[in-house]
Image (cartoon, rainbow, N blue to C red; front, side, top):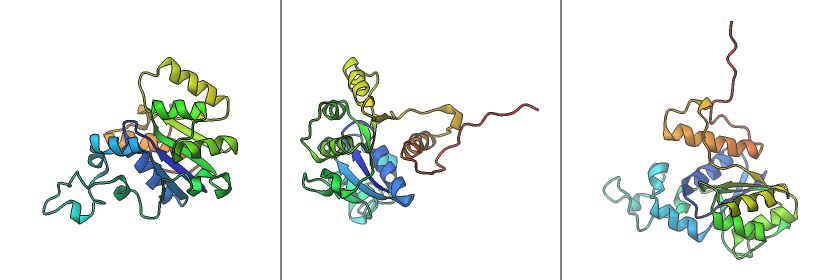
Length: 210
């Protein structure tokens, strides 16, 4: 399956990075679209601290394990097999490129509002518009709390068009013991929404009494 992962400037951009890598690892073709806002958030939140430094090039580590923050880029944490697109004339801008599904994770309120309004002033938004016009799967993971009445209105309108919403929420039936466990649950649920089999979290199971 050909899947687009859009990463907007909402908090927790590292979840989008992890999701893209997991989708690729599951054997699917992945295109990543990174907004300008996502790049800002990546650095302001020091997202690499949640991703580990095993993928950081040596030149960004110097003689220590402390990365040079001025030179770190999101691309360094995405698998090299992921196709990173950014221009309006790239493949994701056209339905003929054959992408079957798209997830925007995380999705900012600004991006959500623009998708609902049909605004296409960057490739991420254009790709979302393509999913809508081609009636293909579009999943949006809004990262906001609480939701504003306007965001709820936008989600309601898009839901009527077949868009699926999957906010990054945790559940304790998976018995998370760490932040990584909680994030695995979120990413695993996103993969579920894309119909991608995964074992990232413990699934719901009712304990039967003897």
